[in-house]
Image (cartoon, rainbow, N blue to C red; front, side):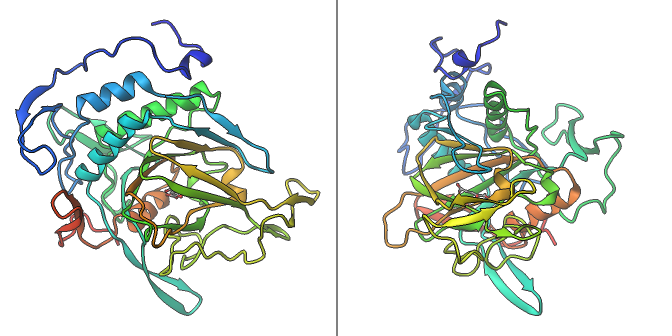
Length: 392
Ligand SMILES: O=C(O)CCC(=O)C(=O)O
């Protein structure tokens, strides 16, 4: 197959969409949205013993849209501030396909509203994560290997020895990335390659669902040690538009602050939003237009502290690269009182040690019940109070 050049990669494809490899079959289902219309059905769902439910594969029209129209635009580089290295696709997935994908993922994925206790010194705080979450993947020391063609054929093995993992290796049951998200993972890796970025080898997929402007994620950075140095994080937005804020970490003599936010144990990842969840950070000194001292090498320099606001629409993608995570914080602030559509955010990351796997399942699946989107109630509804594969 002829290689596509960089320019060609970032130009929408002009070849007519092919039929998906598996011909869809037709069936009739009745939901309030379809109202007895005939809809396409695609390949059989992804099954795994660690899943609380089988997870549907992408409908063929979404798969075709993804295969032939992404990236919908060339990325814009945002690197005009110290340590900032972003690629912004506006959009990455064409908006109509992104909206279909949003509805599909909200309907098909299991979600959780995780609660946990954060301890800082002697003080314990009960945290209610202010958004819905779910996670798939495993760190690089383990690999899901296809054993046969059965529905539960993915077996978790030690990456180096290809032997079964010891039962005590994880405090959770890692879940393989289902086919519907793996399609996206591969495409986002290809977008990195086309932009000249080293293959990030994503092995985790974290999904947030913000049901309304009340849902949020506080200022934090994804710079945990279990992600290795200079992690590459790709962040895809689907559904309603929300503001994405970024600000430089304050300079701390002798090193950077670690970027954890309210209610979060030091070093605990993806758990940054406290009870208020309004983006309260430890950096009360930051304000637009003032100067802050940062130290990129040994020589401190003054840099303008400009907070960045990017409005993320359906299908947009930001890839955060290089020194971004170790120097910048990001958040999705609450937008109380505003009518905001629901929004899904998917981040692809690479975790390098088992601690990353334990952390991600602890804070994104947790020990509470599983929720599913209910088309009639138009909200997440508790479906299984008894948690399968509860994490410690
Ligand atoms: O929803 C977003 O765009 C940001 C999500 C995020 O920061 C995270 O999952 O760490």
